[in-house]
Image (tube, rainbow, N blue to C red; front, side):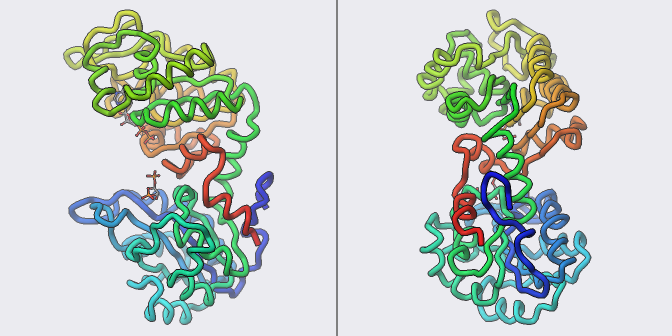
Length: 409
Ligand SMILES: Nc1ncnc2c1ncn2[C@@H]1O[C@H](COP(=O)(O)OP(=O)(O)O)[C@@H](O)[C@H]1O
Ligand SMILES: O=C(OP(=O)(O)O)[C@H](O)COP(=O)(O)O
C-alpha cells in the first residue's frame, strides 16, 4: 500500500504463475529519420524494477506502452524497445506486431512463467488516446479482448498518468487486481512527500523555457501553503521581472511575446502583489555580449539576450536552498547547454546535493542538465515525469492516480 494514498502495489498481490498486464511508459526520444531510439532511460526504469520483479516472481508478463503520437515523427513501433528490454531483464522477451487481435491473444496464451511479451504501440489503435472514464474504456475492444486473459493489471507509467487513456485506466473495473508498479510507487511516494506534506522550509525552484505553467505552479504551491518560497530562473524569471516593471531589453521582451507569455502578465502581477518576497526574483543576470558572459544588475539590463541568472542571485539561491528541508526543481536556471551559462543551474544543483533536504527534480532538460553537470545521482529523487510532474505539482493529483485510488484491489 502506498501510504497516504491507499493505493495497492505489487506487495499486495501474488503474481506467481499469473498472466500480468503491465502498462509502462517506454515513450522515448526517437531519431526522426532512422526511427532508432536515442535514449533508453525510461525503458531501463521499468526494466530494472517492475518488469524484473515480475520475471523473478515467475509471472507471465504482457507489456503495453505507447510511443509518440499518431502523425508525429516519433510515432513508431515498439519492436526496438522490446530488443532493448531483452538486454535489461534476465528473461526471454518476445515482441508481437499486434495489440489485441488474434496474433496478440495467441502469443499471450503461449507465454510461460518468467517470460515477457511486448505488444505493439497501443496508440496504433485509435481508441487508445481518448480521454474517458474507466467504465467507458472498459467497453472498448482492447479491454474486452485482453481483460479475460489478465489476472493482474499493473500501472507503472507515472509519466503518462495525466492521460486517462484506455490502457491506463480501462482495465480497472474489469480485472481482479489493479495495482501500482514500482516506478509509479516510488514517484508517488516522492511526490506526496514534496506536494502534500513537505518538511519545512520547502523551496520550489522554477526555471526553463515553458513559462506557460509558471503562474499555475506558483499559484498552487504558494496558495495552498505548500512552498515557503519559489526561486525563479530561465524565461519564468524574465517574465516575472518584466511583469514587475523591470526593463529587461527589447530582445528578451520579443522572446516572451513570440511565445505568447506576455498574456500571462496580469495573472503574474497579481501573484507578485499577493505573495511579495515569497516569489524570489533574480537580482542579477548574465547576458551574452559578443559570445561572452557579462553579468548585469536587474536595474540595468542592456538589449542583449539573457542566458542565465547572475552570480549574486545564484549565491542567494544556494543560501536559501541550504536552509531548506524540501527542494523541488523543474526547469534549468539558464541555457546550461552552453558552459558559460551553466553557472546558475550548477550552483542550484550543488546546493541541493549538499543540503540535508529531500530533493526532487523533474523535466527532460532538467534531468539532462543534472546528468551533464554530474548531479543526477546526488539528489533524493529524479522523476521520470515531464507533463505529468507539472500537472501533479499544480493539482496535487492526476487522473490515473485517482483511478488507482478508487480501484486498488
Ligand atoms: N534565459 C533563458 N533563455 C532561453 N532559454 C532558456 C533560458 N533559461 C533556460 N533556457 C532553456 O530552457 C530549456 C529547458 O526548459 P524546459 O523545457 O522548460 O525544461 P524541462 O524539459 O526540464 O521541463 C533549456 O534548453 C534551456 O536552454
Ligand atoms: O513523454 C510523455 O510526456 P512528457 O514528455 O511530458 O514527459 C508521456 O509519455 C506522455 O506522452 P503524451 O504527451 O504524448 O501523452
